[in-house]
Amino acid sequence: MSGLRLSFCANPTPAAQRVREVLKARYNEAPFDQADVLVALGGDGFMLRALHDALPRSIPVYGMKLGKVGFLMNQFREDDLLERIARAHPATMYPLSMRAGNIEGRIKQAIAFNEVALWRQTNQAAHLQIALNQQVKLEELVCDGLLVATPAGSTAYNFSAHGPILPLDANVLALTPISPFRPRHWRGALLPAGTQVMLQVNEFEQRGVSVTADFHEFRDIRWVEIEDPREQSVQLLFDPEHHLAERILDEQFAL
Image (cartoon, rainbow, N blue to C red; front, side, top):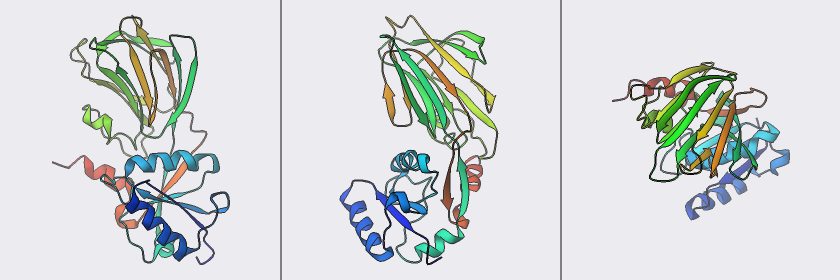
Protein backbone atom coordinates (compact mmCIF):
# COMPACT_ATOMS: atom_id res chain seq x y z
CA MET A 1 0.00 0.00 0.00
CA SER A 2 2.82 2.42 0.84
CA GLY A 3 4.14 1.94 -2.69
CA LEU A 4 0.89 3.10 -4.33
CA ARG A 5 1.68 6.10 -6.54
CA LEU A 6 -0.99 8.79 -6.83
CA SER A 7 -1.44 11.62 -9.29
CA PHE A 8 -3.95 14.40 -8.55
CA CYS A 9 -6.17 16.49 -10.81
CA ALA A 10 -8.71 19.07 -9.68
CA ASN A 11 -11.47 21.33 -10.85
CA PRO A 12 -10.00 24.80 -11.60
CA THR A 13 -11.91 26.41 -8.73
CA PRO A 14 -9.65 27.97 -6.04
CA ALA A 15 -11.02 25.64 -3.35
CA ALA A 16 -10.31 22.49 -5.37
CA GLN A 17 -6.84 23.70 -6.32
CA ARG A 18 -5.98 24.39 -2.67
CA VAL A 19 -7.03 20.87 -1.71
CA ARG A 20 -4.96 19.45 -4.54
CA GLU A 21 -1.83 21.20 -3.29
CA VAL A 22 -2.40 19.86 0.24
CA LEU A 23 -2.85 16.29 -1.01
CA LYS A 24 0.12 16.50 -3.37
CA ALA A 25 2.39 17.41 -0.49
CA ARG A 26 0.94 14.90 1.93
CA TYR A 27 0.98 11.88 -0.42
CA ASN A 28 4.09 12.66 -2.50
CA GLU A 29 2.44 13.03 -5.90
CA ALA A 30 3.84 10.98 -8.79
CA PRO A 31 3.86 12.23 -12.40
CA PHE A 32 0.72 11.17 -14.25
CA ASP A 33 2.60 8.85 -16.61
CA GLN A 34 4.07 6.98 -13.61
CA ALA A 35 1.03 6.94 -11.31
CA ASP A 36 -0.97 3.86 -10.31
CA VAL A 37 -4.18 5.80 -9.57
CA LEU A 38 -5.51 9.18 -10.68
CA VAL A 39 -7.32 11.06 -7.89
CA ALA A 40 -9.91 13.51 -9.24
CA LEU A 41 -11.18 16.38 -7.08
CA GLY A 42 -14.41 18.08 -8.10
CA GLY A 43 -17.89 17.15 -9.28
CA ASP A 44 -19.34 14.82 -11.88
CA GLY A 45 -18.56 17.18 -14.76
CA PHE A 46 -14.91 17.26 -13.84
CA MET A 47 -14.90 13.48 -13.32
CA LEU A 48 -15.92 13.00 -16.96
CA ARG A 49 -12.85 14.97 -18.03
CA ALA A 50 -10.66 12.90 -15.71
CA LEU A 51 -12.01 9.67 -17.24
CA HIS A 52 -11.17 10.95 -20.71
CA ASP A 53 -7.63 11.76 -19.54
CA ALA A 54 -7.22 8.35 -17.90
CA LEU A 55 -8.50 6.30 -20.83
CA PRO A 56 -5.28 6.19 -22.94
CA ARG A 57 -3.38 4.72 -19.98
CA SER A 58 -6.30 2.71 -18.54
CA ILE A 59 -5.31 4.07 -15.15
CA PRO A 60 -7.95 3.70 -12.37
CA VAL A 61 -9.65 6.89 -11.17
CA TYR A 62 -10.69 7.62 -7.59
CA GLY A 63 -12.84 10.72 -7.21
CA MET A 64 -13.61 12.87 -4.19
CA LYS A 65 -16.51 15.30 -4.20
CA LEU A 66 -15.62 18.99 -4.16
CA GLY A 67 -18.36 20.14 -6.54
CA LYS A 68 -22.15 20.52 -6.52
CA VAL A 69 -22.99 17.08 -7.94
CA GLY A 70 -21.02 14.01 -6.99
CA PHE A 71 -22.84 10.88 -8.15
CA LEU A 72 -19.56 9.54 -9.56
CA MET A 73 -17.50 10.70 -6.57
CA ASN A 74 -16.62 9.52 -3.08
CA GLN A 75 -16.97 11.75 -0.05
CA PHE A 76 -14.00 14.05 0.52
CA ARG A 77 -11.65 13.25 3.40
CA GLU A 78 -8.01 14.20 3.55
CA ASP A 79 -7.03 11.38 5.90
CA ASP A 80 -6.46 7.68 5.08
CA LEU A 81 -6.52 8.16 1.32
CA LEU A 82 -4.17 5.26 0.56
CA GLU A 83 -6.20 2.92 2.76
CA ARG A 84 -9.48 3.99 1.14
CA ILE A 85 -8.12 3.40 -2.34
CA ALA A 86 -6.78 -0.02 -1.33
CA ARG A 87 -10.29 -1.03 -0.13
CA ALA A 88 -12.16 0.56 -3.04
CA HIS A 89 -14.45 -1.41 -5.35
CA PRO A 90 -13.90 -0.97 -9.11
CA ALA A 91 -16.65 -0.13 -11.57
CA THR A 92 -15.69 -0.65 -15.21
CA MET A 93 -16.62 2.22 -17.54
CA TYR A 94 -16.91 1.55 -21.28
CA PRO A 95 -17.15 4.65 -23.49
CA LEU A 96 -19.25 5.04 -26.59
CA SER A 97 -17.51 5.85 -29.86
CA MET A 98 -19.05 8.60 -32.01
CA ARG A 99 -18.44 9.74 -35.59
CA ALA A 100 -20.38 12.64 -37.08
CA GLY A 101 -20.42 14.32 -40.46
CA ASN A 102 -21.30 18.01 -40.74
CA ILE A 103 -22.88 19.93 -43.62
CA GLU A 104 -19.40 20.83 -44.95
CA GLY A 105 -18.46 17.16 -45.24
CA ARG A 106 -16.02 17.18 -42.32
CA ILE A 107 -15.86 14.19 -39.97
CA LYS A 108 -15.83 14.72 -36.20
CA GLN A 109 -14.94 11.99 -33.70
CA ALA A 110 -15.26 11.74 -29.93
CA ILE A 111 -15.97 9.30 -27.11
CA ALA A 112 -18.56 9.52 -24.36
CA PHE A 113 -18.78 7.82 -20.98
CA ASN A 114 -22.26 9.21 -20.25
CA GLU A 115 -24.13 9.80 -23.49
CA VAL A 116 -24.11 11.00 -27.07
CA ALA A 117 -26.96 13.46 -27.59
CA LEU A 118 -28.40 15.25 -30.61
CA TRP A 119 -30.12 18.60 -30.06
CA ARG A 120 -32.02 20.98 -32.31
CA GLN A 121 -30.13 24.27 -32.89
CA THR A 122 -33.08 26.44 -33.90
CA ASN A 123 -36.72 27.03 -33.03
CA GLN A 124 -37.66 24.25 -35.46
CA ALA A 125 -37.93 20.66 -34.33
CA ALA A 126 -35.30 18.16 -35.47
CA HIS A 127 -36.30 15.49 -37.98
CA LEU A 128 -34.20 12.36 -37.44
CA GLN A 129 -34.03 8.97 -39.12
CA ILE A 130 -32.96 6.06 -36.88
CA ALA A 131 -31.18 2.96 -38.21
CA LEU A 132 -29.79 0.08 -36.14
CA ASN A 133 -27.14 -2.18 -37.64
CA GLN A 134 -27.84 -0.59 -41.05
CA GLN A 135 -31.58 -1.30 -40.88
CA VAL A 136 -33.92 1.70 -40.72
CA LYS A 137 -36.22 1.35 -37.70
CA LEU A 138 -37.84 4.79 -37.73
CA GLU A 139 -38.04 6.86 -40.90
CA GLU A 140 -38.60 10.13 -39.10
CA LEU A 141 -38.66 11.18 -35.46
CA VAL A 142 -39.83 14.76 -34.91
CA CYS A 143 -38.33 15.89 -31.62
CA ASP A 144 -36.12 18.32 -29.74
CA GLY A 145 -33.38 15.72 -29.68
CA LEU A 146 -32.30 12.13 -29.11
CA LEU A 147 -29.64 10.50 -26.98
CA VAL A 148 -27.83 7.20 -26.55
CA ALA A 149 -26.81 6.62 -22.93
CA THR A 150 -24.52 4.11 -21.24
CA PRO A 151 -25.59 2.46 -17.96
CA ALA A 152 -23.31 4.86 -16.06
CA GLY A 153 -24.90 7.81 -17.86
CA SER A 154 -28.47 6.56 -17.61
CA THR A 155 -29.08 8.50 -14.38
CA ALA A 156 -28.01 11.82 -15.95
CA TYR A 157 -29.65 13.54 -18.96
CA ASN A 158 -31.19 10.23 -20.00
CA PHE A 159 -33.23 10.02 -16.80
CA SER A 160 -34.23 13.69 -17.07
CA ALA A 161 -35.60 12.88 -20.54
CA HIS A 162 -37.69 10.05 -18.99
CA GLY A 163 -35.29 7.35 -20.15
CA PRO A 164 -34.73 4.16 -18.11
CA ILE A 165 -32.13 3.74 -15.40
CA LEU A 166 -29.87 0.85 -16.39
CA PRO A 167 -27.95 -1.42 -13.99
CA LEU A 168 -24.23 -0.85 -14.33
CA ASP A 169 -23.54 -4.41 -15.50
CA ALA A 170 -26.38 -4.42 -18.03
CA ASN A 171 -25.18 -5.10 -21.57
CA VAL A 172 -27.63 -2.60 -23.01
CA LEU A 173 -27.79 1.07 -24.01
CA ALA A 174 -30.72 3.45 -23.71
CA LEU A 175 -32.01 5.14 -26.88
CA THR A 176 -34.16 7.98 -25.57
CA PRO A 177 -36.04 10.74 -27.42
CA ILE A 178 -36.05 14.29 -26.05
CA SER A 179 -39.50 15.90 -26.21
CA PRO A 180 -40.79 13.69 -29.03
CA PHE A 181 -43.66 15.17 -31.06
CA ARG A 182 -44.17 12.49 -33.71
CA PRO A 183 -44.53 9.55 -33.26
CA ARG A 184 -46.07 11.03 -30.13
CA HIS A 185 -46.14 7.84 -28.08
CA TRP A 186 -42.67 6.50 -28.93
CA ARG A 187 -40.60 6.49 -25.74
CA GLY A 188 -37.33 5.01 -26.96
CA ALA A 189 -35.71 1.59 -26.88
CA LEU A 190 -33.17 -0.60 -25.11
CA LEU A 191 -30.34 -1.66 -27.41
CA PRO A 192 -28.02 -4.64 -26.96
CA ALA A 193 -24.39 -3.68 -26.38
CA GLY A 194 -22.57 -3.64 -29.69
CA THR A 195 -25.49 -2.20 -31.67
CA GLN A 196 -24.47 0.29 -34.31
CA VAL A 197 -26.74 3.35 -34.23
CA MET A 198 -26.92 5.54 -37.34
CA LEU A 199 -28.85 8.82 -37.11
CA GLN A 200 -29.57 10.87 -40.22
CA VAL A 201 -30.68 14.49 -39.96
CA ASN A 202 -33.53 15.13 -42.39
CA GLU A 203 -33.89 18.68 -43.82
CA PHE A 204 -30.55 19.60 -42.22
CA GLU A 205 -30.36 22.89 -44.18
CA GLN A 206 -33.44 24.29 -42.42
CA ARG A 207 -33.38 22.26 -39.21
CA GLY A 208 -29.94 22.61 -37.71
CA VAL A 209 -28.81 19.90 -35.28
CA SER A 210 -25.79 19.68 -32.97
CA VAL A 211 -24.32 16.63 -31.27
CA THR A 212 -22.56 16.35 -27.92
CA ALA A 213 -20.40 13.48 -26.66
CA ASP A 214 -19.97 14.21 -22.94
CA PHE A 215 -18.42 17.71 -23.07
CA HIS A 216 -17.49 17.74 -26.80
CA GLU A 217 -19.97 19.57 -29.05
CA PHE A 218 -20.19 19.72 -32.86
CA ARG A 219 -22.74 21.79 -34.76
CA ASP A 220 -24.54 21.62 -38.12
CA ILE A 221 -24.56 17.83 -38.26
CA ARG A 222 -25.89 15.72 -41.17
CA TRP A 223 -25.38 12.27 -39.64
CA VAL A 224 -24.10 10.59 -36.49
CA GLU A 225 -22.80 7.03 -36.01
CA ILE A 226 -22.60 5.65 -32.48
CA GLU A 227 -21.05 2.36 -31.44
CA ASP A 228 -20.26 0.54 -28.19
CA PRO A 229 -17.01 -1.20 -29.17
CA ARG A 230 -15.89 -2.32 -25.67
CA GLU A 231 -12.29 -1.98 -26.86
CA GLN A 232 -11.18 0.40 -24.09
CA SER A 233 -12.25 0.87 -20.51
CA VAL A 234 -11.41 2.71 -17.31
CA GLN A 235 -11.99 1.55 -13.75
CA LEU A 236 -13.71 4.03 -11.46
CA LEU A 237 -12.98 3.31 -7.78
CA PHE A 238 -15.59 3.64 -5.03
CA ASP A 239 -15.56 3.28 -1.27
CA PRO A 240 -17.39 0.04 -0.32
CA GLU A 241 -20.32 2.00 1.16
CA HIS A 242 -20.71 4.08 -2.04
CA HIS A 243 -20.41 1.44 -4.76
CA LEU A 244 -21.68 2.80 -8.08
CA ALA A 245 -23.76 -0.26 -8.99
CA GLU A 246 -25.71 0.01 -5.73
CA ARG A 247 -26.19 3.75 -6.14
CA ILE A 248 -27.59 3.30 -9.65
CA LEU A 249 -29.92 0.58 -8.34
CA ASP A 250 -31.09 2.84 -5.49
CA GLU A 251 -31.90 5.64 -7.95
CA GLN A 252 -34.77 3.52 -9.25
CA PHE A 253 -36.45 3.77 -5.84
CA ALA A 254 -35.73 7.46 -5.19
CA LEU A 255 -38.86 9.61 -4.81
